[in-house]
Image 1 (cartoon, helix red, strand yellow):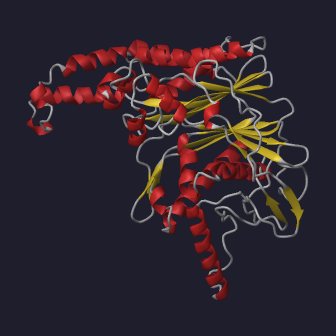
Image 2 (cartoon, rainbow, N blue to C red):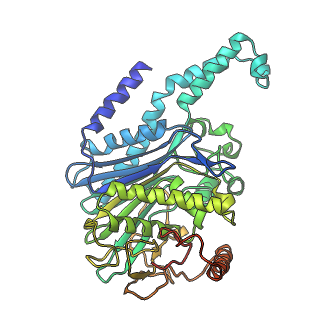
Image 3 (cartoon, helix red, strand yellow):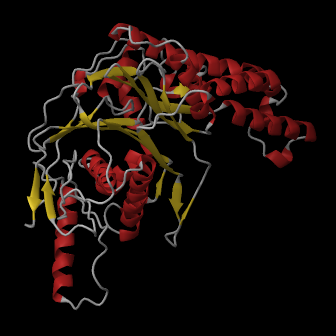
Length: 490
């Protein structure tokens, strides 16, 4: 144990010498479970992790990691992945194929090195298990002999030491080339702003989960029943079909019913890699943990979650020049949206009984800082998005429509050298960005179709607004920070 910790600490000191990138900010919030009184409590320590380093030769590395069953893997990956990529491995002469190969090797190498650190504990765990007779498996703790109780306590400690995994979304910028490497269900969004005020929001890659048809086909080719996996919705308690760590599904997958028929390891740490060119791009890149995007989707629905996330980021960047404060403000905003949905008692309240750890990394791309004096609608410069986000300091009105580019399900392939076919995607019909400035009232976020449940919620809101308009206003003006589900006038 001492040797393993010393080795890890040595690597931590290496990354401590790397400079942090000053062109990004990170916001976070711990998990929360709402009680009957509406108050939230944290159910476990924060398991998310992140990295944001500036390397040599115009290289930048960012990552957001969603840990589960502990923070060990997320912390380990954030340290060792940085060491694998930035300590002399990458330089400006590397080709696309070189970068893809190095990224894939780094993910694989980090997982293998993590498993080496728990080898001894796994061996001790297996040995101690032999001291618990099989007839005691269903016996309560108090019925065990004193010796067996000690063995069981030690086994529990060892399980806590070796268990756990993480999903990851990593962004590498090298010579104006952006590489997104994804394992699991975290998310990357790229917001591009054009000179005529139109913007495009692109989700890079799709989550690796039990609803991803490409992943189900990959599992089917290994001998796993995709229908059973899709119906279960989870594998060994996790929805992700690609993870880092988690010895239970990596080393013992034949013991798991859903995976027992697999001819080789079904849950993998191999990333899907997508490339974008950043020459002339103005805007920002967002890396989000699964907990953050899930909280917003639970409260608002998945249809507009990407647009609303980008909208909130743009609004905060318009108000303050401190990227750390802007990222944290967005996370706090999502927390409030989620809490309000839970407290509303409406259709989505049941889906918002809890949320997991939330992490947001914002990296600006040739994006001038806010002077802190002008709002997005009062001149100064064109912002990537004028947003459905009320600002009590603004007296003018802005209407916007957002553009979202989603990768097609069939456009992604598995493997080391996966190339993105949606890097320069075409906006889907019905949603483009336009920024109208002036004092007239405008509508915001108009999409081609509205889900039935959202239509019901809008009808309920309209009825309530009519009732409130007819009744005396005893409570004062509405909260200026209130954000609508689909429409809102700024």
